[in-house]
Image 1 (cartoon, rainbow, N blue to C red):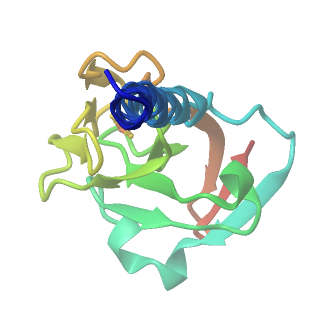
Image 2 (tube, protein in one colour):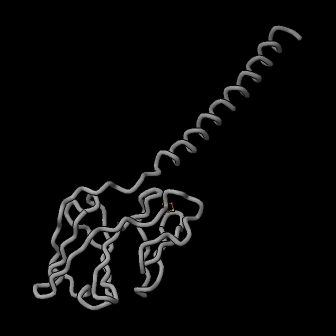
Image 3 (tube, rainbow, N blue to C red):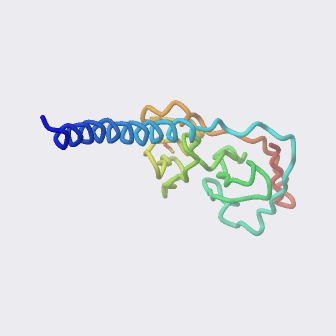
Amino acid sequence: MNEYNKRREFLKSTGKVAGFGIFAAAFSSVINSCEQDELPPKPPSGLSFQVDLNTHPELLAIGGFKVLTIDKLNGGDPVIIKHNPDDTFMVIDGLCRHQNCNLEMPSDPNGNMVCMCHHAVFSLVDGKVLDNKGFSTAADLTHYKTEYNSSNKILTITS
Ligand code: FES
């Protein structure tokens, strides 16, 4: 093998190693970014928030539900408010916490919500995860305490 061919062989083998290295680094960063996006639910803050249901009439009827963003409740992320059959209210985290994705809402108050990113399934009856599609952080949705004053229709939510 002459000097030209030796140099050529050297460059070809070096290129293969470098190419594999670039692929391995890119693949590794994709895997790592998926894992790093998995965030636990936010811890409770102890703050209270009042919602005047006169301005959200769909929540006055039993079975009514709505996605709302209320000041700093849930860290500023949306919550789902539902008027339960026993005339209490359920307020739950409005995001799937696998990677903080929005939930597609059902038309039926007893139906299921589906994560728009990886399709984990949650119950709108109690906020429990029914199928996390293998993503362990797509767990039950965080519940907030509620108190309802039916005379003035003010719902107090405590985080
Ligand atoms: S964001 Fe992945 S299952 Fe919801």
